[in-house]
Image 1 (cartoon, one colour):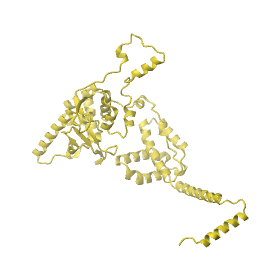
Image 2 (tube, helix red, strand yellow; image 1 turned 90 degrees about the vertical axis):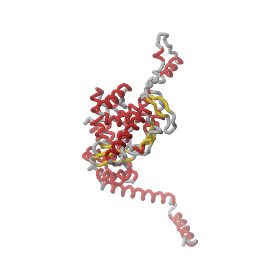
Image 3 (cartoon, helix red, strand yellow; image 1 turned 90 degrees about the horizontal axis):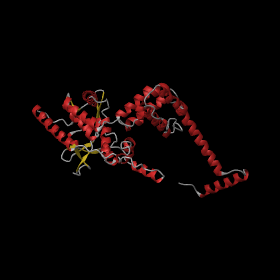
Image 4 (cartoon, helix red, strand yellow; image 1 turned 60 degrees about the vertical axis):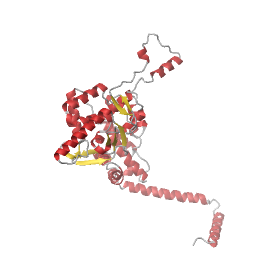
Length: 406
C-alpha cells in the first residue's frame, strides 16, 4: 500500500512551516548536501579498505579473480613472474591507497637505470597498470597512478629503435636450403614458418584436419606450447581462427609429408598422428617450440653462415617480402591474423621506403624546385617489385593462383 493523501498533506504543511521558520532553507541544497556527505563517507570507507590491503595483496587478488579466468595461462604466468621479480620487492608492501604516481615513476626510473630493455619495461608496466585499473573499477582507489606511463618510454638504443628484423630473399633462400641439407627431417616446419607467416606456437599446433591441400590453404585454430613438461593448447593470439593461403610448393611438400607419415604409421600398425609436426620422441604430442628454436633453427643458421635471428623473424620476413612484392597491406594483415590493419601498418609501414617518392618531387616542383636534367631515371622512379618463384592463392578457397614475392 502506497502513501495516502493525508501523508502528502502533512509533508507539505511541514515544508511550509520549515520555510517559515528558516527563511534561507532550500530543499534542493539540503538534498545536495546529504548526497555529498554520503559520497564523502563512501570515499572514506573505500580509502580505509584500500589502506588495509597492500599492492602485493591486491595484485594476487587480481591475478586470481581477473587474470586467470580471462587470460591465457602463459600470459598469466608472465604477469606473475614480472610482478614477483620486479614489482613486489619495491612496491609490494605499500598500501594500495597510498601508492602515488611519483613512486611509480621512481620505480621505472630505477629499472631504466638498471639497463633493463624496453621490452622488459613494457612487460612490467602492462600488468601493473592493468591491475591498478581493476582497482579503480572496483572503486578501491580513485585513479591509476601508473596510467599512460609506458607511452612516455622511448627506444634508447639502436636495437630498440629498429622495428623488426627481417631476412632478405637471398638470406631466406640460404636458410631454407640449409634446412634441406642439414636437417631434412625437420625442414617442413621451417618451410611452413617461412611461407605462411605462422607463429611458432601456431605451427606446432597444426593438425592434419586444419590443412586443405586441394584448396591450398590451412586454418590456424590453435596454439601448442610447453611449460615444463605440461602441454598448453590454446586459441591463437588474436583469439580468432584464420585461414592462410599456401604456396603451391608448400602444398607439394605437405602432401609428400602426409603420404610418408601415413605409410610409416601403417607399417608400425598405428594410427596417423593428428599433429602435422609431432614430437620426435612421442607421436601423440606436438613438437616443442623450444626444440625447433634451439635444435633446428639456430643450428641451420650456423651451418648456412647467416646472422643469428629469431625464429619469429621468419614471420617478419614473410610479411616484409610480401609487401616488397607489391601485395596490399590488407592481404598481409589477413594472412598474419592481426586484429586491425593499423597493427600491420605500425609494424611494417616502413618496409617500402621511396615507393611514393614522386609525391615529394611534385611538392618541390610546385613550390619552386627544379629537377636537374642530369638526374638518372632510376633515381626518380621507385624500385620495382621483386618477383620470386612460387605461387599462392589471393583468397582462401578462391582457386585463383598468382605469383608472389617470397
